Image (cartoon, rainbow, N blue to C red; front, side, top):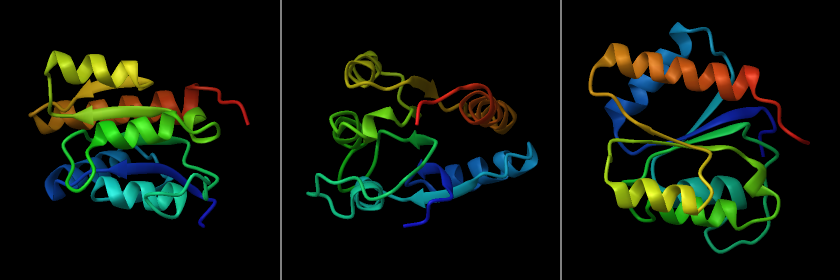
Length: 144
């Protein structure tokens, strides 16, 4: 497992993935990035398999998680992360196009650290990614 991964981006939309990557680079957020394109890939990265109870990675510092994912949706990924004694320490920022109140409520009930609706405008999206990086990777202090 790569101990240097610091951002796990769980995003199935290729355009949003590319925009997030561009925004991170443009704002000199050079932390190592891992991309999971669905919920299964995210859980396999973190736990080795969808059914495993053992955390297999030492990072990331933050997870940017879309909700509307194929195979296993983002809420189920969040549920698995926040129900694990080690993984629940990893900050999870929901980064989604959903503004449905039920998604917001359930995300926070499951332990999301933040809920950000993806802006449609690229400049706003870029600024949102910059602020996420600044806060979760620079300002926020995490326990080991």
